[in-house]
Length: 586
Image (cartoon, rainbow, N blue to C red; front, side):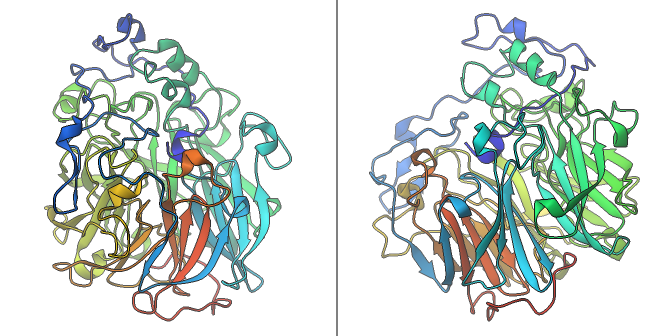
């Protein structure tokens, strides 16, 4: 399971828009009882069968053949002939240097996933690393001597977000955030997502109980109270005590006043998902399902399929909704569009946005286009030159890659120079028990006609390893993300860095899109002394680059690593930055 599977359950009242066809799900005593007008069941159930063990595995040339199609099966080992008996405790490195290694619980807020942000106060640089109720603040001014300056946790209440403790009020947490400098307030402003849990433990722990055959579970989840939207804070320092709440905003379209909704009552939709896209200026874009009719996703424990909203942030204390956009098929009643998707009925695919719009150039600087990664819905190009009227420019379907997340991230850092974007999903299973998640090179110079022109190379182990393919190393293998647009400094041209789970951090040279190559990597050991055994397989889940100091931070299941690479990133600056980070650079 990834961290997003561990978060607090979503809440919303049932909004019956259209009566749906009832599906009989194999294994359920009476699946008709699960009828919910906002759960798509317009196609016959055709969940993937477990893969035939003879259809995938190690090949004679030392490579691995991936299964063609698999069901949702997270957190389960799938051994095969040639897989290592034990997790690998060695590390591997090429064209990189470890400048600092910080292990243990103090540097591991979550085993599965974390978000990061940078702020500078009084000549010191701070890194935020967090996942909801678990958060850390590090002083990283001296890269070789990182110090923990704050630890936030709900450990003393067994991680229960409904309970208050010394760090958090009941139902409060640290959502995925963007932090930018507001000229209006002359201060950092943090916009923090508050979302329903994307994968629901109440429906997930028992495979026989999911949204298709557990009506009581769905009803209970929809009735839970909680904010679905985002909060806005002014930051007057690096610690939580320095946060000053400016606004609490609901994205529930049924609320009469988004700025004065009641989080003690159930709200509809998903809330704001992942890191909002805002650069400190006027316009902000978020991924969200505004109500419960945004339901067009096959994933068995997720109730919402997110589209996008645009907001006016001229006054950070009073955000104003401008527009809402979605693809046909995402909402209840859009059955004909939904049926056209080859994933319809597979009860496996994640469909809808997981991240906000990916924007190469802010609208305020003359930018026009945004790119949307929407899981099983593929890639959409939008015209956002008028944020109050977002328009579809083009759409590109990608080949099904089930199971796993099929489309989660688009790196747009190279677009202004080359017209290329890099589209990827990420693995959700262990031991490569799903199709490999390619990073697609997409030529979008003509936004009306984007086209796949290649894929990035698949990482392979060095000759010094005792295995020939990373699938043998145990754990998850595949790309996660290239970090976020919130990194300080200007992104180096021709460089992409991905967290690659059991393949560590992989840096690609894409300066010549026709010949992309892996230029550097750091693959840490599989786990540390304090890592829980059940998390050994979730190894490197992120990379966050300080482009202004040429330092890459690898985020793992056992701590964080500070990495440099003169060849790929340039000469590192291990001391305080020359200038404080204020706004994201493009």
